[in-house]
Image (cartoon, rainbow, N blue to C red; front, top):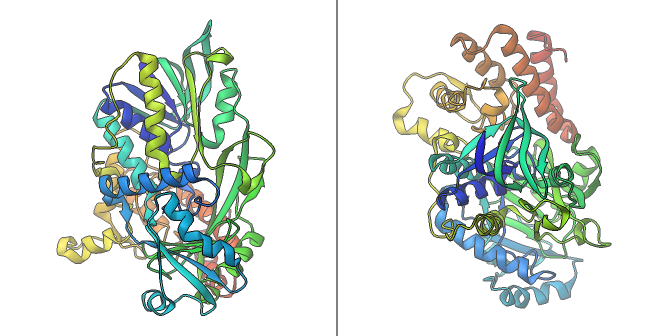
Length: 512
């Protein structure tokens, strides 16, 4: 295979680069070793930052966030819920930080308004009575899966190519340039080469490993962040703790649920990033200081992601810059190899633009980025990721005798048909995990206990799954959900866990 540009990594930045290049008329192939948003882009709280969190220590990052925040609200509104956000201090929090906050935000260009307690409690009755200061900022929430799926769909529509489940094995060099990447199709087991003029490393936390294959270095530090998901939506706005960044300082509404976080724990092994019970306890105990209702809320899942931080000194953990790194590896013997990593979901478009500018310059292409003025089109591959859309579809009268395969999130047979059709265009076996990424299945209260086997049975009836394939898909899907359920099992959750265990193991015989 030959292309102008090979992009390694299918997260928000990689898919954003693919779209940016496609709109400039530059051909690219994107390879991803698993599926879209396999790394940090798929394991975050979905916050579209106003920049206020960074305004105190990094005015540049804060300014980039607010500019991209406003731009994405205009260009990709279907991916965003414009919730706004509160920053709240509680008794015992640093008073100077709260008093300096509005001026710090304004200096970074972030709109900020102090809210009186009476007004705040009327709008957010779940807030603690111990709150002392409240400021409103233009935070919002964003669907990272819909964002990346729509970006890569538009890239492919304009000449790009996506190869999922394709692992980079190494590079073949010709002097100071990389001639080709050696890759493996993990479905067929076939190995082949992809020749390109430019190679872009957008592998997130794995950027250091990819760079090493090219004989280059990107010193990475991994910070694991754990988040919890509640069974219902606790607040309408994003609620931030008004203090220096620390553990458990945010509550983010996500459709019909709320997401609580985040911790910061140094991680050494990227192969096993799992949430822990201790982290869940910290998140619940700290979050309830802002929103007491969290104490009695039912937690349906925990999950963890890894922040890809580039090490550039002695700082560790939250002290390491959240800014992105764009590096040309010409001085390391690879003149057509660049790395883009770090940053935040909010600034993915800016990161993609800067990387694409660099690529264009190396290719001698004099075309500007269009992603800052061109709306992001909605795609069929992401339409069912939106919380509540399936319910609205059914209530609109479009539902006419279809079977509901997921009752928690109201996912019907026609929705599954639509998703499977889009997956099998690539001639890939449609796993339950792939279907889950492109829909709401497994995200409700039962965490896949019922919908997983219903969908597997439905696909068996359609001749897509064999009995063994269906059984294995259910086991893999449930085991993945269980990783997130274990850390949050308390009194309420234990009842659901016991029911799920009895049903799946006792009735269906899924012992492992």
